[in-house]
Image (spheres, rainbow, N blue to C red):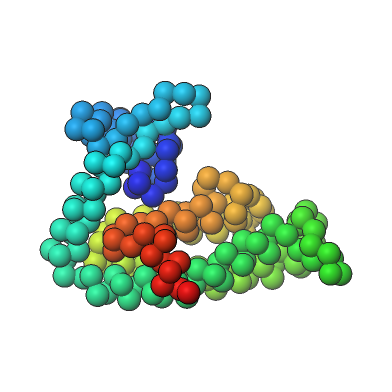
Length: 199
C-alpha cells in the first residue's frame, strides 16, 4: 500500500490501509531495518519505499499471483479498468472545470443541476468499479478495501462535500489513482509501459 500512495506519514498510511497506527508503525520500523523503506524527517517528508523495497515487493506480488493462479483474471480486470479510467478522469475534470458558453471556468458548485449530472456519471462509473473490485477481491483480498473507500468518497460527494470527488487525499480520484498503481504493481507494468501500449 505504501508503494501506491507515495511518501506519507505512518498516520496517513494507517488511514489509507485501514490498519491500526501502532501496527503500521511497527511494520515500518521492521522494514526499515531491512532497508525496504526509508523516512524523510523533513516537514513535508514521510515514509517511502526504497529500490530494494520495490524489488522485494515485485517478488512478493509475483509469488502471490503464481500461488493464486489468477494472473489471467487480474489482467482481464486491469483491461476493464483501463476502459473506465479515461471516463473517470473526464468526470473529475468536468467536476473541477465547466464551460460557460465556450469559456472554461472553475466550477464553483453554484449550479446544482450541473453538479448532479456529473455525479450521476460518477455513480455509473462506481457501479462498474464495484463489480470489478468484487472480482479482484475474490482473487487477491487486499483489493476489497478499495470498494469501501470508493463508496465512502462517493457518499461524501453526494452529501455535498465537493472535495471528495477530486480535491482531497481521500477523494474518489485519489483512491482511484491508488487502485491504478496497485493494479500496475501487481501485474509488473510500469507507467511508461502502459503509455506505450496505448499508443
